[in-house]
Image 1 (cartoon, rainbow, N blue to C red):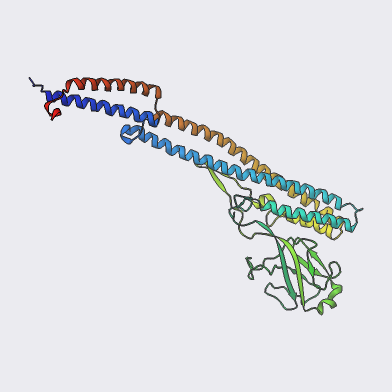
Image 2 (cartoon, one colour):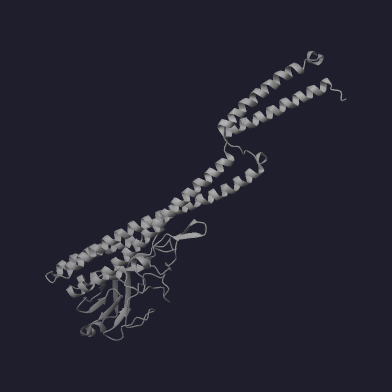
Length: 388
């Protein structure tokens, strides 16, 4: 039979009190943090599940941020395209007015001035930005897709670096913007297209008398009757403004991952909205309208109307595309929010404290601890050492 000593009893009582204190502390920690899992040793299996759920929640949260960013891109695009539609609607109205045979040359010049304002508006729309990014420039978001440049070109009877030459008169020459050196051409001078009617001047010559201009294609044709006058001129300085499209590749797609293995393009490319290099662009249409008004040609003004209307259809189609993608993002966002809520609920079941149960356990444990302290106070009596 094992002999139970006073020391053994005293040690057992102290161990029991300590164990009750530890359990009481654990319950206090759970109540103060609101979490069941405060360290890996609390529940290794639960901690593993919790980490996986947190990882999934973080991905879901990132998807929601991607969707919000995509919605901002598409909303901005829709607003800009709507403004572009308004511009072309007004251009179509001006084309109808300008094609009226009762209008005078002066009245058509007034209309041309208004179309020039519409061109400026369209360039501004095409250069719409969101947080500093050009949204119609594909992946070249740091480059404006369109700009209005003030250009100079000089022609003479000596062939220049752009192969321009006035050795035969009449001559048709392609204009190059010699003020710029960033083109992909050998000289770095970009060929000028979409010249703004009313801005082109040539020293000593008169438009319509000495030369004509194809404003969309950027060519000048010198008239035969002025051959003698041109032969005496050594240099011709041509000044003009023109709409330049960036020569960078702007066909890239800006994508956002909105669900696992699912990406959605959130941008509208410049070709889709304003027309590609090989198409009649929105600026070609507006320049064609301006040229008809500038040259006082009702027939040419009327001929520009189908191009304006085609550009309007293109913008409407681009707006429809942006709208359909926005609807898809909205639907995906609703699904992602439901998934995120479900993940939060599952995480809460594993991590969060059941306060009603834990408070009840805490009160019971507190009573046990207090009882153990009272029993211990009676069992562990003072010894002679306490009085020394």
